[in-house]
Image 1: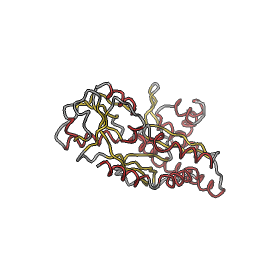
Image 2: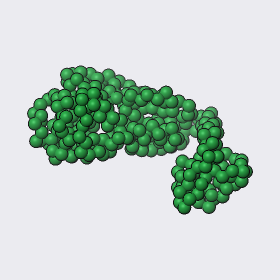
Image 3: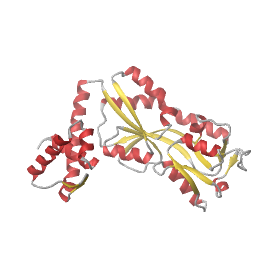
Image 4: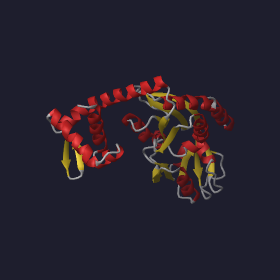
Length: 307
């Protein structure tokens, strides 16, 4: 048995499709199918049930998947350690983050980092916070940006900004001339929300329920600008971080500071504790931490001043 057999097996288990696994590994589908058959012959058990184009793990496959992943991770960590020893300043970094976060906080950081490390490529994957967490655990991402709280002991966390979430209303809303509002003031409104895989979605729903009402959700999306456009057309109310709203200014939308509601936009960089970070990822993390220090205090002072 070779390490590559386990890598192929884990990739097929992850993708549940031989062709997709082959494409991810830059192999042909017959090659990966042959390798899996060889592994099954060596172990004397079937690892997958093959029904049409669908692939499912057998009981034996499920039994060895976790040990196989541990072996692969140990092997990858060994390679990363050797890379660090030889100081090879090259590689790639995969960073998952909610949409608009890159523009809001990381465009300049990535640009400056690329000047120092021109041979390190940085790939940004825009998905919701829940998907970022899973991507780290699956090994598809090196680092992630998440909305706190993150109640998971498997991750290290560096938080860098804490700012208020504001309500936005359209030009015909009765509160459009106000400066402040309470969340319960919107109990009869339609809500234009981020999708369920965004942590802010759960925050808003939870706070509404604590106040004794279940919000009427008219629409869910992954795009900040779509929420703002829908609100501008008087189709509902939205809830967004103030900084995101300021980057998407529309005159038709009116911002309201929320009183007595603990909705905050507390962002953090996070990574898996038990996974070795490559030289590239650690260099980016250190660079980002230095660049972001002080953001938290500045944001807090701004919010306090509004109050």
